[in-house]
Length: 132
Image (cartoon, rainbow, N blue to C red):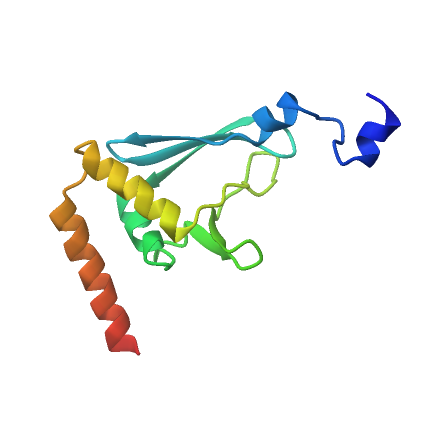
């Protein structure tokens, strides 16, 4: 790797290596959506599972009451409120639209009941209306 590669923004990882490092794999499971990624700092393999209940709340643009996620205003997404064992924040960011996409996948896979999801979303919206 030449100095020009660093000056062009490639750093020490270029081409396919950076794509593999930044890849996040999502898989719909019975308990929720599982995300597999690597730590930015130590490159350790990480697995984050977002339970269906949390995805439903996040899909409405809200934080779950258990504080397992935080809102990143700069990037406009939700991120796990957790860190790797090396103390680096987990860089997984998901938007409400992505959460809803995973929920639709869970319904299609038979892991969720669409009517129950709709009822839960209606309750969340009703609670928001009562606050305002």
